[in-house]
Length: 399
Image 1 (cartoon, rainbow, N blue to C red):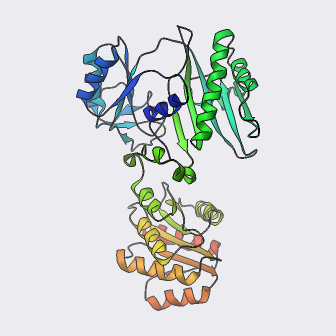
Image 2: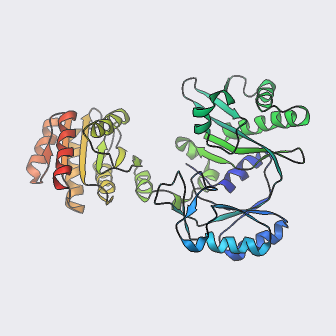
């Protein structure tokens, strides 16, 4: 689960990380009041959407002005003007795609005098099973671009969970950023704070970009992005309260109600599969035969008929779907349950696109018989390769 910048800053501030003063606002009137409360003389007006590249982004509406989604204001009146332009407008960044995202809230923050910009993030290193720090002197830039162009400017190290973060980790960060004296001490304290926040809140990613040194000689987190481990959210009702459903795909929200692993993609073939590995293989083979998957959807090993019906409805609610592939290898999940769920869903929502079903495993013959007896126009498949070729062919034939 992702949260907004202002929420992320509030979380890390609880653990002692240095951030600027600021207020989240939802109207031009609130923006003006926030600017007066903060006092200025410099304010930063930041669009709050779940996407990076806001500063370089552009609004679709001409009325929003040509400046990006992060703007520097030099008066209270300018803060209000920017808020009027940005609220309700659609911001397009490198991470939103052409559709962009509507800006429903802004963050009004004290301006900072910046001397240097750095990059610092934390994530779970899946190879070692440890929390890793990623540090670079190239702050304010896309870390992927830095990794591609100048990988020697990135330091990565992991923390042994048996010891937790130690003083030498802070010294390592300070050394990588060429910080000495008081700034090195601040870096050590920041590393401790962020590690404590990461572990206490079950984060999966924490990114500070940029981490700045002000002209007053203070380290400060000028931006913050946090992703939480969704599997651990039951332990953090306070974090769940930060969820902004307007930033999430409606189909993914619906899927979460039924404990379905669903991710919307950009293709035309909807997929319903049991098991993450088989689901990934299904996506790959669809691409191999020249089409793009419209989603990743894993119904899991113990899905009920109700769950399968819900999954099918979610797939068919996507207007970009031109064909559907159901690929089930029954172990715990029984093929007859899948068959009944698919039929129930089709009878409820109708079938407007080609449907290919491949069943194998437990109760496979019962499942196939249920589909044959249904009278539905379902294309049967013998194996995954056959299923992929048939759905791709069917989609291309209908144009």
